[in-house]
Image (cartoon, rainbow over all chains, first blue to last red; front, side):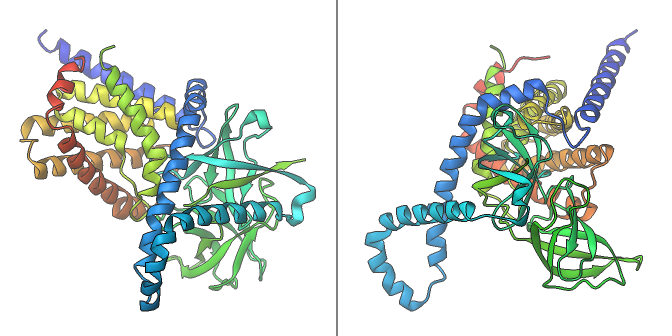
Length: 274
Length: 166
């Protein structure tokens, strides 16, 4: 009789764990499904998150600027004296210049698949809070006709695809996320493969399972192949930085450095099928 | 509103993690503020309370980050329980003990997370997980936990007495 409370606690624990496992499995179908309550919370907190992200970005720009000067030459050190008095103005001008350049790139972005896709610019308001997944939160949602699986790019290259949406926000699954797989090919040799996210920490992705007899070399460019229908053909993904043979000897893997700087995204373009 | 402050802290921590901390990554890893709060709370709780508040905090993080409802809840439950067990056995006011205990609880939470990803058929390379993600984030968490505990020194007793007991 004295063991009843312990047994009851153990049973309670088993039931809770089983329920949570079931919940994880159900909501995880399709790469992570957004619950209605989760969607409402995200909607409510998005303005706060967006503001915090913007402030963090500005602080990063300002604080990283002096770090760049640490590696300057003697000549630069002399120029720093003059620069010091103008630094506050330089911060502002650099920011405006950077913003203007990004917006100009976006306006000039006319890819070959433009006839099949409309383009919608979105601002980044947050990133996944953990270390295991690589996602972004953006400030466009179903009110802007954004839907799941729409490709997301920058003028530099592929970013990922829309994972889920609320009315005013969407989650973008980056190509570096371990759940991501993109049908792709080597532009120069047309060798097909799948670009997989490996969460390497260096921002690299892997072109996996390429038959060992295929010609894949460092420096070649990887683009989307168009197979699998999520991504149109021809979106640049990145450059091959190394090639390794699998231990079994039948396939080789290539490490690909994405063209888009996925760690410092401020605006992205959503490709919306016409 | 018993325990409401804990939920508010979890929300603030989650917001900070998705914004500010993204700019403080070291080797692609950032500290997990929500997990740190769960662990610090676990140190001053019984094992049952530590586990249940870990579950509550993790569940809230799941709701805030979207998808996989229960993933962080299970991870938080394990971390909260382990933190409570080690917190009751060792002198947690010592910074080294606090750091080591946080590292162990974070590492265990990382292993639970990895196993749950396998359960979901999401494959993160074992090398990436066990040689980089888990140890690096655990070390980062340990460092930040010591800093937070120093900042909260003196207030911890007040916070602890406000936590409801299950």
